[in-house]
Length: 88
Image 1: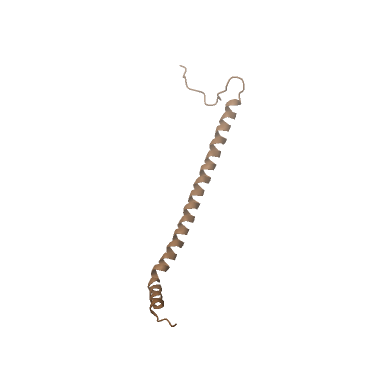
Image 2: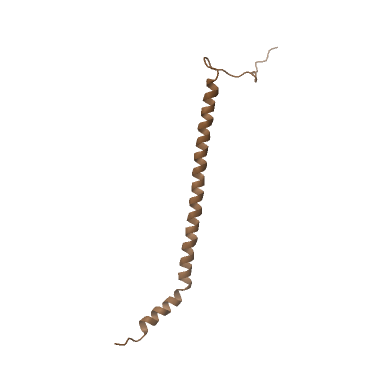
């Protein structure tokens, strides 16, 4: 009885040039690899932007925290400047 199973050792060949299918597959793999590299680079750029944004946010928070923590000293100084008597 004959089985209709494909022979795994036999390569599929296109009419004309036997290497054409292999070249087409190689081009497809190279294109997919290039797209993967571009996507990876884009993801790395996004992560770098997120890290830089987080650092900038932390610096900004530190500046405003400093202002908020020291605002009572600034208000006292401003009141002292306004309320001190002026000499003519």
